[in-house]
Image 1 (spheres, one colour):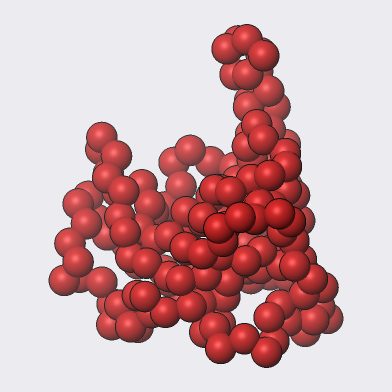
Image 2: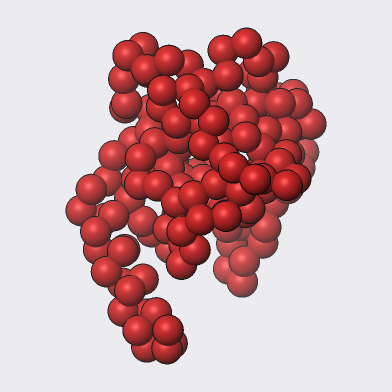
Length: 166
C-alpha cells in the first residue's frame, strides 16, 4: 500500500468513526455478561480514570483513586483504535469513544499489550480489556498524549468470551 493510499484509507476511517461517535460507558452493561466475572481484576471506566495532566505531566498531581490502581489488574470497556493490521494484533490503543480523533484527551486512551503468545483481531465493537494497569505518560511535542497502559492484557467480547488467539 503506498503512502498516499494509506493516508486516504486513514482519512476514510477517521470520517466514519467521527460520524459514529458513541461512548463505551453509554453501552448497556447489564444486558451483556460481564467479561472475566471470576477475575480479581478491579472494574473501572474511562470516566473514573479522568484526569487532566495539563501541559506537562506531574506524577504528584495524579488523583489518589487512580494512583492506587497502578500495578493492579483492572478491567475496562472501550473501543480499539483503527489499525492497518486486522489479525494477530499484539499492541493497540483502547479508546473511550468509538469516534476517531488525533487531538484526544490523554486520559481517554490506554496503550494495550496483549498477553505473551496471544493476539487479537480488530473490531469496531466495544470490547473489555483486562490487564495490569500502569501509569506511564507519553509526552508529545506540545502536550501529554497518553497517560496509561495495560500490560499482559486479555481481550473479551461484550458477551464475556475471550477475543484472543495464539
